[in-house]
Picture (cartoon, rainbow, N blue to C red):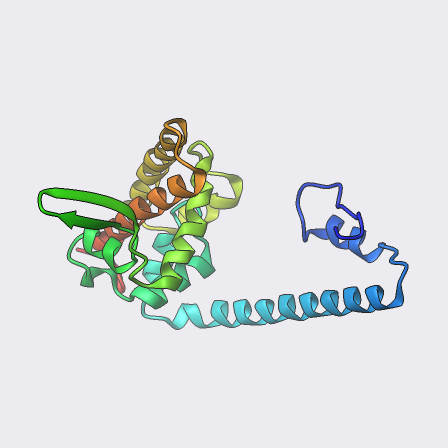
Length: 218
């Protein structure tokens, strides 16, 4: 961009974008060298991510939390890696006595500043588990769109037990409407998404209540 080179497409780091990058002509030797080194580092990072994801996929079938991993993937925005990250950080969800407790552990509840009878609420506390919170906020962006089960989601939803599927669909309907309502009221998208992530934690807790690590709860 510093050299006036702007990708004309919409989605970056796909096949078309990489082809465009490979065809760039840079006039100065130093600039070309720096660019090639950056591209090499990006390819190395991508390969490393691929190796780690493959290792996770290989290990998950032997994990005691596998039933919860499968169940959580019925939720929109949650695929295998996100489910593994959330559960690796949280463990068995039944240890949280209420959705509010889980939200607090994730640092997704509003902060408070109390003076006498006055209570002022601020942004989220960010006092809890950073990795799980970040994963949920990233997942929450998917609720910008109307509720539906895409072709990409169908297999993941079908693999989950029926109680998890029902909770996940209820979450889709609720959270998609919630996001649009907050934005319509003038809330910034980032604020709306954070609110959606907080409610997502409640639905995740509900799935944990119905699906035990060993399978559907009796």
